[in-house]
Length: 456
Ligand code: GDP
Ligand code: GDP
Image (tube, rainbow, N blue to C red; front, side):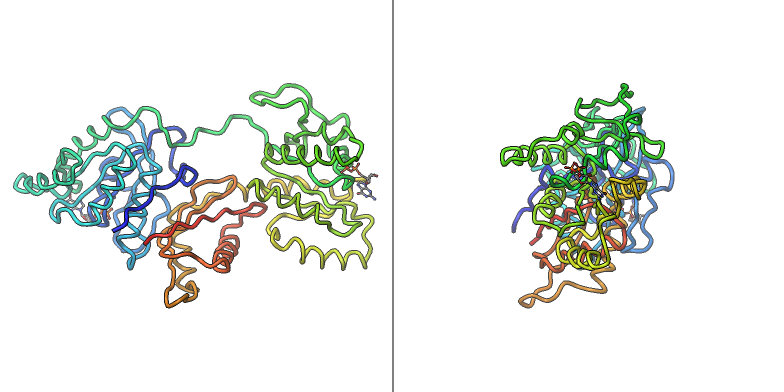
């Protein structure tokens, strides 16, 4: 039988809500009903990680700030991740894999009254390959008479099984002491806290003559440009801090916009490079279109650069003052035809030259940043995908019907979601999933990256 592949670096989940920045992460994993949530409740000392009464009900939170023996850490309870009863073994393995990847150390809980199952053995193999330190908890040892059950778990090859009764508390202190001994002081997986006082970084991009410098002048003016040092900002001399609606924003590479380069073939090449660089450094790229002319291939290419770079996108229809009824009809058609794939981006009509509607930019930027940084808790994501699959399963293909066993958002900015499935998903079904995710969770102004990992 095939061993499961471990998550790749870019698929390692980052902090879920409830996970404190930078604290080491301890994951509690194991088969359903072995007592994971009960043990987590012991650690938390309160009934937060509510023990599952209704099977199949997914909780939103999986990680909690915890403290034991004077040490603070984040505890991840996979007990709430029930997803797919049919593919149970596969789902357990997947959850374990995700939890291992997002943790610094692991408590593997085994039900000592049941003994070692194939799923336990599979999880142990996964743990070995991950190299994560692990403490083995032999749970449901409610009395000394049951200690023998715990001893049988030496066979897992993980060292001493700690006999514990999560329900009554017996031995739970020893398990946690052992866990503290293997938990590193500094987390290798938790995301560091975002820099204080950092400004949102915006790039104004688009092909030559669409109105970038006009828009920059309209929103900045000469007197509004803040050039003094701001606490905590490192900025390039080519960038400018501009105040919009009483808030400060960092506009990337405005020198490149202000300094008009003569348009030759060579200059074009550098313009493309500059655009690429600005997009990479930005959080949000504002792509300007000159709507007095038809949308060009070059416009579409710049938009694609933004999507490929995984940046938030705002579209500006500039030179709206030049748009008459006839042009407006054409533009609607062109937009439908050429920009349907980015219909999720905020789209504003304005005239940079006159300043008309330029005050709408901030709202679009805020919306795009919100969409770009949206995080869907693991429980909610799985509950929603369960509903979608119930209502609209993947079409039958060659007598088979791929199913999504489990999903997790592994990063924000841009959102990246990994689907663990029983088979490859058709492109059409992936687009359907993306559309439904957008309807449910917004993700306005942001590309969504969806990865699919097939389980045998
Ligand atoms: P999880 O699915 O692994 O999170 O398991 P739960 O924590 O939800 O526990 C499953 C069931 O086992 C519940 O009915 C618990 O009360 C019970 N249980 C948990 N720990 C113990 C224990 O130490 N002894 C006994 N006898 N039952 C336990
Ligand atoms: P850039 O190359 O993208 O920086 O474009 P510019 O800002 O230099 O604008 C190119 C030309 O378009 C200039 O002649 C501007 O005056 C003109 N322009 C920019 N915005 C507008 C607008 O909203 N309406 C009209 N009618 N012309 C505009």
